[in-house]
Image 1 (cartoon, rainbow, N blue to C red):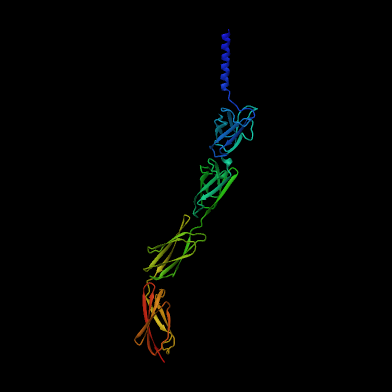
Image 2 (image 1 turned 135 degrees about the vertical axis):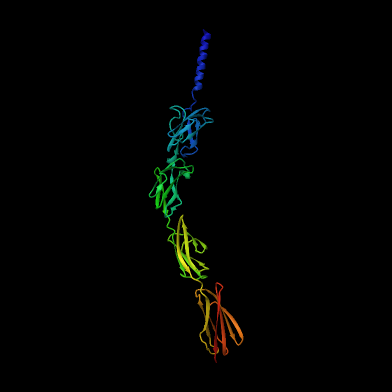
Length: 400
C-alpha cells in the first residue's frame, strides 16, 4: 500500500511540475515597462522596431524569460508575445495599409502587475496620410505653348523633417484642361504624379486629407516676330538691314533664311535686333524668319527685290574756279550712280607746275589755299567699301 501511495504522490508531483513549465513567467507586481520605437512616423506598409525594457520595483531587470505581450490599435506587432533577455523584449511593428495613429502597448502581469496603460509602456506611431505635414506641388514644364500641350504635375507629400512618405493617396483637381487621373499614390520619394493637358491657364490643386497645395500652369505667348528691311529696294552688293522684333513678353530663338541659300542664326531675340545681308545677284528674294519659343514655332516672310548694281562714279567741284592767291578753296567729291555705296576714303592729288601732293580723307570735302598763280589740277579717287573705286578731275586758275 505504501508503494502505491508513494507512486501516486510522484505522479501528482510530476504533473504539477509539467503544469508549471506551461505557465508564462510574468513581471512581478509594481514592475515598470518602458516601451520605445525606432521611429514614430511610418509610410503605409512600413515597419519599425519596438523595444520594451522591463524592470522590477527595485530598478533591476526582470528575470530572463519574462513574457511581454504587445497590443496595437492599428497595424500589427510580430511577435505578439516575446520573452526578455536582460530585461529587454523586442518586436517589430508593421504599419499595414491604413493611415492613422497606432497606440502600441507592452504589458506583462495581471491586474496588479503592468497591464494598465502608463506613460512609459505606450507609444504612438503615425502612419501614412496621418503623418503628412505638407503638400508641395510643381509643374514640369511650368507652361504650355499657345497651341496647347501637356505638363507633368508632381505632388510631394512629406512628414516631419521632410520625411518622404510612400503609399499615400493624393487627390488632384484643375480649373482648366484634363488630368490623366484624379488620384495617384505617392512613390518611395513621397511623390504622386499625373499629367495635365491644356491650352488655357490652369490652377491645379493636390489634396491629402485637410492639407493641400496648388501650382499655376501658364500659357506661353505666341512666339511671333515682325520684319522690316532697309533699304526697301537695294542693289546688288548693297547691304540690306533686316530688323526682327519679337512679340511682347517673348524671347524666341530666331533663324533667318535669306532666300539665296544663306541663313543666319540670331539666337534668342528678346528685343528688336538688326542683322545685315548682301545679295550678289539681282532678283526677287523671300526672307523667312522662324521663331521658336517654349515648343511653339512661328514663321513669317517678307519679299525684297534686288536691282542690278548701279555704276559707281564720282565728280569733283571747287567752291571757286578762279580764286586769288592764298585764298582757301573748298573741293567737294560727289558720288554718282550708286549713291548708296558706302565710301571708305577719298584720295586727293594736287598738281602744281609739275609737282604733286596726295592727301587722303574719310570725308568728301577738303580745303586748300594756293600760294602761287596759275592753273592747278585736282584729282580725286573715291574708294567704296566693297572694293570699287571711281575717279574725277577738275582744274582751277589762281589769279593775283
